[in-house]
Length: 205
Image (cartoon, rainbow, N blue to C red; front, side, top):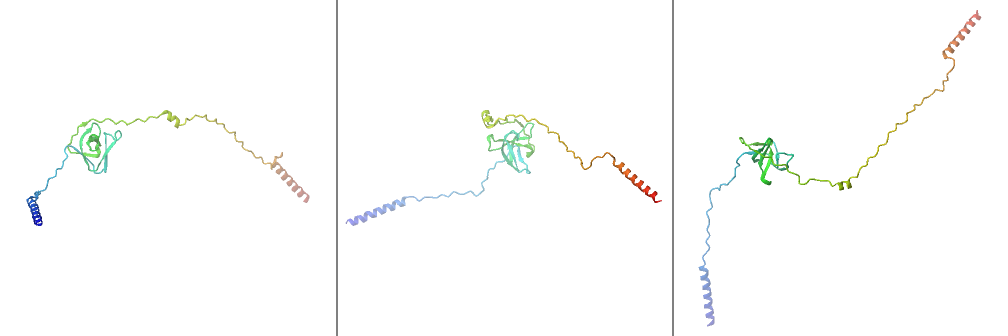
């Protein structure tokens, strides 16, 4: 009797589980239709006057002001690169441009290095002030005195001219001066010889 009740109870449980499973709705998958046309892309087009780096330059520097001596370089522009032109420095060949990536996005480029949009009329813009150095180097006089020894001036020695050079003289002691001239001795000898010859001639006769 108990076994029949257990079987009936199990059948009821299985029926309840099957009924609960059938009552749950199946998920519905909805597929959205994909567009068949091409989606247009939005591209920005430059407007206003533009500067273009000449092709004969590989790159040119841009500066924080209209001078390569008084202002630091803030970047470069490559050959053929363009940038919006904002103005021109009055009396100078420098053009103010929009240059992203630096404070205020403002830079200057030398006008002979770039071409300007045909018909562009740039207005004069004020020249920015020259940047001041962050710190002015000063020398500590105590440190200078400790590191650099003082040079005391010394009196130069007086110049003493050397003694005059004595040139030695040589005397030929082999020749002793005679009181009778040599020519007179020769004439005398010739006279004595001639006299002897004359005397011998007379004796022979």
